[in-house]
Amino acid sequence: MTESLNFPARFTWGVATSAFQIEGAAAADGKGPSIWDTFCRQPGAILDASNGDIACDHYHRFEEDVALIASLGVPAYRFSMAWSRVQPLGHGAWNEAGFAFYARLLDALEARGIAAHLTLYHWDLPQGLQDQGGWLNRDTAYRFADYAAEVARRFGKRLATIATHNEPWCTANLGYGNAQFAPGVADAGAAIQVSHHLLLSHGLAMTAMRQLDVTAKLGIVLNQWTADAATDSPADLALAELEYARSVQWFMDPIFKGHYPALALAAHGAAAPRVEAGDLATICQRLDFLGVNYYFRAWCSAATPPVPAPAALGHTDMGWEIYPRGLTELLLKLRAEYALPPIYITENGMASADSVHDGAVDDGARIEFVATHLAALMAAMDQGVDVAGYFLWSLLDNFEWNSGYAKRFGIVHVDYDTQQRTPKASARWYRDLVARQRAVTVTT
Image (cartoon, rainbow, N blue to C red; front, side, top):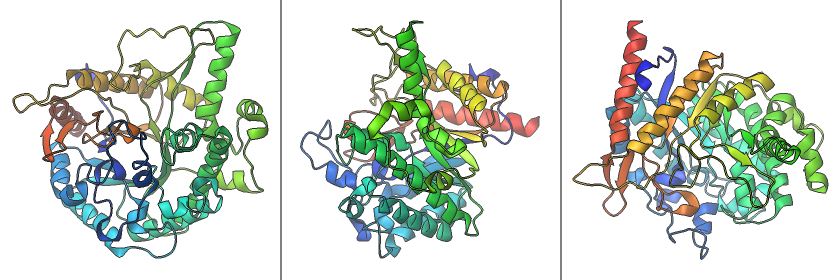
């Protein structure tokens, strides 16, 4: 399927990870605890009762992992920084040993010619800030801006891009709405206020970084989906419209239009966030890029029981419907509604129940998943959507949040007992795809 696709010469091909999911070294070299270190200790919080203390031991094996990326011929790597590794409390003193680790990682990437794409926050708030109220405390937004500025001051000329947040929808709704993620709060009203503080922190961080002499492009990463009505009934159509307003537009409208969507505000009622004067102007900052993470669509049925979605392409090991067409539809809808900067698909991939047999991992379903989504991506680009790159999630099997190590997203299998890395069939397929696409752009 991908043999017929010709992505533009400027297109960036990459793989992605996040700090807490792979680094391990939970207390090494002065690192402070994060809310996920704390959450993992809560009985019943993690499916397999595991934690991120060791994970993929990337902190000690990063050179091996960078060599893996290079062996795949992938020219870009998206990763996140553990805030509590470089500032143990989330305020106060910086930890030079933590910054030294990321400097070594950048050295290794630069030596291999791999562009570094950094995410400042991938859900692992320093516990020291949680002790002061976490994201429900407005002051955390200002501490985040301080952190962003320090990172940009040190590394802003060594990074291709800096994203403020990864999926603030998850931070707010899974961390504070239903207690599925750290810090484990179940309070719908708190989740809405947290979402505003996250957006405020993004705007403050963008302002702070723009005042520095950086060459990195600046943006944010949002998880997004289409909201499809199960039928043409007024109830289903209204439910789909509200779902889209409360998820996608809730973050996009403040960033690109300077206001929250009226439909979602009305639905929130008295739980609508407290917004201070100037907040929305701070949030509505120019972006150099928008990161979009796409995994599935929302299927909206008001019936009892709900009308099930057709599942012609099946589901991933996470139970998520496989719906590549939704990526095309989402991108076209975004282009119609907003004045967009270039888009990166910053995450796309699937969990599957992978295992090693005779030294190999056959994950054909993942290859099909990525191939069909790349075709959907090209369909959107053919209709005028400006997409700058694609980052496959994930380089490595890793700690999959509240699922622990039970779910595997990697194109490289990790034996957590031995830390043996085994490239899967999808890794070789992606290597060949990237080589073919890059060769085409060189010769045309």
